[in-house]
Length: 293
Image (cartoon, rainbow, N blue to C red; front, side, top):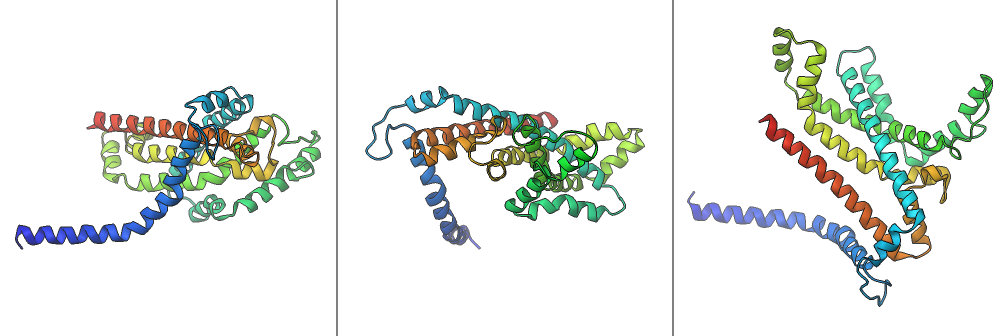
C-alpha cells in the first residue's frame, strides 16, 4: 500500500472517529463548557440580563463576605483533614487485602458496599446512628455517658469526616489494589535476595511504583471532598452547624436568593482552587518521574 492510500485510510479513520465523538463532544460543550463560560461572564457583570462589565468587583465583594470566608475555611479544613486520612486508611487496607487472608473476598465486598448504596440511604443509616435518640447515643447512655448532639456541636466536623471516609474508602482501596497488582513481583524477590526487609520494600518499591496511582487517588479524593454537600445537606439542611457550613451550602443559598453574581463568582473560585491543586500534584508527579528516570 503506497503512501497516498495510507493517507486516505488515515483520513477516513479520522473522519469516522470525529463522527463517533461528535455527539459526546456536543453534549459536553452544551451542558458543561457553555454554562461554565456563561457563569464566568456573569461573575464579571452586575446583572444577569442586560448587565454591565464590572471586572473583579463581584470577587472583591465575595471575599469580603463573612459567610463565604467561613464556608471556604470549613471546606479547606475538611479537605485537609479527610483526604490524608482517607489516603492512609485506603492504602493500608489495600496492602492488607493484597495478601492471602481469611475471608478476603468478603472483606473487600464489605468495604466496597457503600459505593453502590444511594446517598439517601447512606444518610438514613447515619441519621439512625447519630440521632439524639440514635444507636450511638443509646450506647453512650448505657455506658453512663451523656448524650451528644453530633451534628450541632464541635463533633459535626469529625462526624462528617468519618462519613466521607466510610463512603469513599472502598473506591480508593480498589484503585490502590490495582496499582499494587501492576508492580512486578520480581522486584520484591530481588529485594528479598539482597536482604531488604518489609519496611525497606514498602518505602523503596511499593510507594515508589505506586506514585502515579497515589496522585490519581489524591485527585479523585479531593474532587469527592468538594462533593460532600449532598450528604451534609440531607443530614443538616440549608444552614447546618457552623463547622460544616461548606462552599456548596453558600452557593446553594445564593441560588435560592437568585444572587447569580455571587454564585458564579464562588463557583469560579472553587474551580480555580481545584485546578491549582490538580496542577500542583501533576507537576510534582512529573518531576518525580523525571527524577526516577
